[in-house]
Length: 193
Image 1 (cartoon, rainbow, N blue to C red):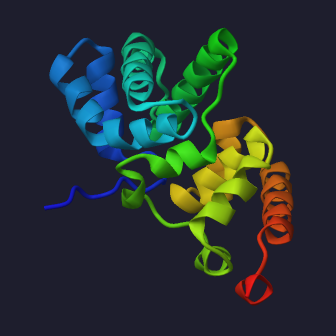
Image 2 (cartoon, rainbow, N blue to C red):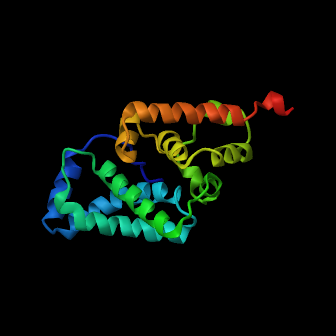
């Protein structure tokens, strides 16, 4: 049986209760949050790093940081959004140390890449995945991140704005420019024939 995908959204009372209990030192409560969100954090991290081992290490680091910071967690915000911010900062810290970043092609080559939500069907219908990968590589890292969070992870513009630390209007502009660039970079099937 396939595990239910975590959907973006607001803070739930159950998450808030678990986080408060974890903040008071209850390991089982943090364990429940870990079990609920580890796959979502891993997928997010994998899009930004080079390989499985590094993604696993970084996911562990994210949860270690979260465990240390859980007493400061504010239950009015979505727990997953809070984790994504920690993950984003951990990836940025790692990238600064390593000066490398995963390409979109590497992310699609991951064995579990088919378990994420497919990007816009109209966009993928225009061309094969190799052309899409090449086009994604030509976007800026921020454009790639917005596209991945929006179309592969299914987050709303407001959630993406929180995750990347930009205003909603700025995120919409980044998304608009990224999609326009992809339309320019990806020829239609008729043009390929």
